[in-house]
Image (cartoon, rainbow, N blue to C red; front, side, top):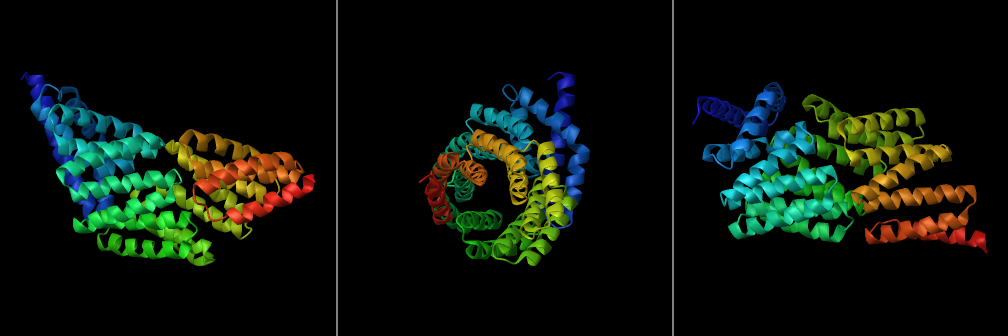
Length: 402
């Protein structure tokens, strides 16, 4: 091996080991999370350089191929927190190619799952489904309960996003059994959390809260700070729906404190929006607007289209509550475009229904009915809990045309 390549190999090996050590510190949780993230940030350019060299030489150099796998395994959790999906996808695709060339089934299964997660985060849900299915097939061939639980959970996330709630619940339950069999507490906690999410979508906030509470016990037991923040935030949302707004705000404050401590901007943005929802419900338009704008600004900074859509929806609802119909319509039309781009049926249904409400307010009942009927079919397809209320309002609009 030429001297220059030997130096690059040593550099890549050193920073792969550094990343593995940083990962080990991160998964210990607690106060070590902040330390691990600071180390990762300080070493990022060298870590990136080592991974790039490994990828460039993986097809012709066995040591580089092994390093590709190491970077992928050690970088998974921290990379998701610190780098955008585009960077994650580059890493996982390069490692996947190396694994396929080496007939490394276990590596392939892992990397299809990693890619699926990045595509899901990017909003390419159909591609994520296909990748999770590939990962699941490989893990089943390997009889790997831990891997199957991860893949099934990922598929359930996708189907929940696509509005297929019953299918999502069935997949989560299957994944939970496998995670418990594998004694994988991290995955078990994530599945319990996600079951809370889907029951929230089905309008069962009290039931969702039970799942969140069980997930929180495990996450605190494991000192999983990021997971704790996510679950506290969703518990706050459930409590707000159950009429316990002050308790919800307390949990949101705890969530924001953890998110800021570990630099988790996605959780921070989502929680700011949830606080906006509480203040909007309380009639505090000024504070609601402040938090909604902060969420939208963070979503734009992150390039997160899903969060941007939610941010626009929050602002639209606030304008609607203040009878600023033109501003509201502008937000909901933008929300509709993003929802259709991401194949987000719940987002599309909500945007269409809110546009229908605006037409109904203006007296254009025909257009309100047209949009309302499309929204109603979408709500039915995602098993939404508010169907009867919508049907009643549609009947009132029809009565105006008689």
